[in-house]
Image (cartoon, rainbow, N blue to C red; front, side):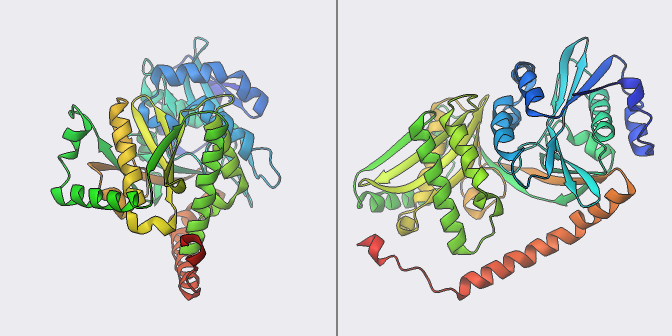
Length: 408
């Protein structure tokens, strides 16, 4: 754990844009950086208190428990090129700001990323509202860059309403990737039947028709698991099915094929320790698995993380039924919003009331970092597009999988 005073944080950077920003920072802050799992455990109570005190619903992925599970699976593993770098800012001894960061070592450069990748869908800082946001942001980021010796920031999945966005904009961070997260807003709807009136009669009729088709396979059961061994098994089943279906359609999903991804969700769903609001839903028809979903919940905000269905039931619209269950249960349980997360696939727009921008940002803090940022902003998107086209081409050349035995 490294500690630094406010005055000593100003000298090392030597970049005018940062100096301009934190010239307005107020005195009285102190900082420490948590670099290992023991230090992470030590700040757990403070982190949780800050999250409860000032965290908004959309900061569901910034809870201590969520990141505790992430650290157990994605740090200190074979081949890991990252180290912890949680920046804690205090005033009068109280934690008032927290930057959940990690340092990724790439050839010749050190890059700051959020904790939580690839399982967290939004990244942000936690700021006590009793402190001036601009000075707290400037001080915390200055400390992070200096103490963690960063050459660049690659800050992914930043919402348009994120607390850290003003600092990124002031320092002219470049957008490396753009996306949108559609959402359903239940505000003003007394019940789900009233909410459904916003959808066309044709779409509601189509859902009923598909439901009758699914009922032809047998009685439908929907189970929700919020903890325990059954939740663990259901989470593993959902992720294994997601892997298989993505592979068959030729879409790239490197994170899903990492065994740490499934292990993380198994622990998060089971909640044997450190519950983090993870819930798994499992739908069956006639005793056969039809579809699954995983969501994460905090303070009136339900984040719809994973949805998948068995391909043999595709003609019955299982995805539609799972989204409807998401919406119906979220409304019944008093959630203000169902967040369908990025990217904005076409099926999400069939349900959404609106969308929020979710962008990746890159910012160089050294000459070496400038090369990396140029690649992230210009080169990487083109390479990714080429890789996706190649994967789709390979998938199109494969014979379609035979499902005769499964249907029999």
